[in-house]
Amino acid sequence: MPTADHTLSQTNEDYLKVIWEFSEWSGAPITPGHLAERMGLTRSTVSEGVRRLTDLGLVEHERYGTVALTPEGERTAVRMVRCHRILETFLVSYLGYDWDEVHEEAEVLEHAVSARMIERLDARLNHPVRDPHGDPIPRADGTIPALEARPLSEVPAGHTVTVRRVNDDNPELLRYLATIGLHLDSTLTVLDRVEVAGTMRLLLGDRQLDIGIPAARGILVAD
Image (cartoon, rainbow, N blue to C red; front, side, top):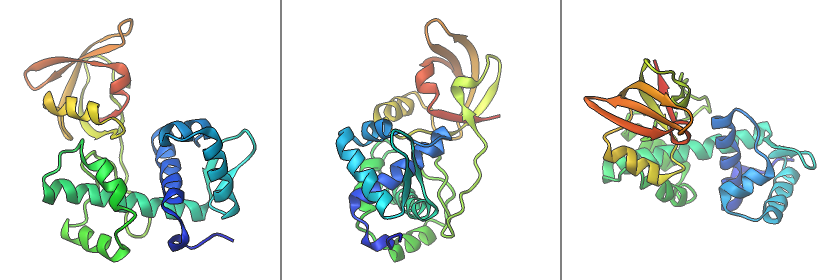
């Protein structure tokens, strides 16, 4: 039988959130190896954690296969993601945090605040649909606002696009983008792609800049 959310440990909640967010970005289930890498844990520790979550009815995992959330596990993960992204939005909007600073703070706070406080923050923020990185904030009923976007790395030369979302896994990338003036809703034109060098040349306002294609995969844009 699945366990109630309030009986889960912080570690179990972290597992579920990471599994959900990986699938959100990649569109595919996560492997135990990727899960260990993203959480900074050993494979043996992750194997034990996945076994525990499987016993609780929160994930499904076949030996040597991928890890996927059950419906109950997904509900818990979405609740944690909603909490995390509302906290990030509050930290930026009211406490003056920069977008590269909020992820770790929200990681700590999300396990300490009550559901009532999250709903109060959501109301104070006027029910935002995205966080400071452009990530869609799940609604209270668990539904996810639609976000039509594709990786900047896939945009061909000559196209003009608008930044809709930036992966928050790499604070150094966020700081770099802020220093060059690239933010959510910035308009970019792809001037050239140098595949052999793994770079793209962009026009941001009246300035040209180069960005690595691997970094561009973490920037989602829309036409």
